[in-house]
Length: 291
Ligand code: ADP
Ligand code: MG
View 1 (cartoon, rainbow, N blue to C red):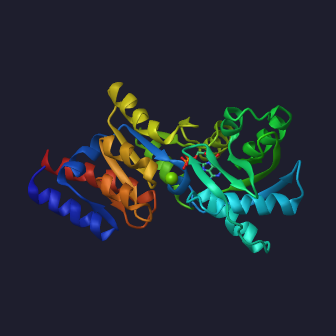
View 2: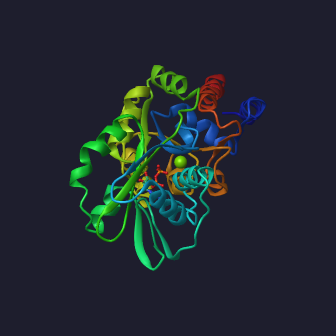
């Protein structure tokens, strides 16, 4: 495209809260065949809320007190939901020792001199904690689009807290518009397969890739590229930064983390997925003008 066309396109973007960092990104965007989107904070608001408290081998008070203590040091949005919920219920966070976040799985720490875990089924399986009696319950929560978090000591699961996040009001329409242009929409998430599938079917997303560990998101992009696809990635988190950099066009949510914004070619200042649709349309207009 001519420098003038690029300037016009970039200016139009800016008017709509779409920050296009390079002319190259604006040119490449017209050829995108596949848009990969992170779930939490990109398709959804990223402000999950506790929806269910299920006690198994502890009282409700014990469970909430433990959950608060374990999740307080974590920076994960799921942890924030649990902290907010427990504090609102009147608990205050007790301190823990030897806190450790296990990327993509959960957290563990010592509390009152004993060791506890919080996280997904994979976290429990790897610690040798049996969840087989809970599978029906966990599936039921996941089928409602909720993310179940398990709390356990070193022997057994003490309780489950389910957390759910609201889909942003414009996400469905944005996904539809991409698809009408013949673009494949892929949802990428560290969340469990069943929860992800519930959200995929709600929004008619073409493909879901779930239970992806943070370090593997980038590989999903390069695998799609290896199949000859031009790929855009939309994300908000630290986890998404390498995938944003790898994609042909990386698009960051404006309300996302600084690292994501730095790694992206385009930033959506309004955090609205419809603005990603507009960005690709602008690119097509810019290319059409020079042909
Ligand atoms: P996402 O792509 O949804 O941001 P993450 O890789 O951050 O996914 O997390 C994947 C999964 O690991 C979560 O869905 C949750 O089951 C578990 N997990 C991560 N952090 C925590 C935490 N602080 N407490 C409990 N579970 C957690
Ligand atoms: Mg996210």
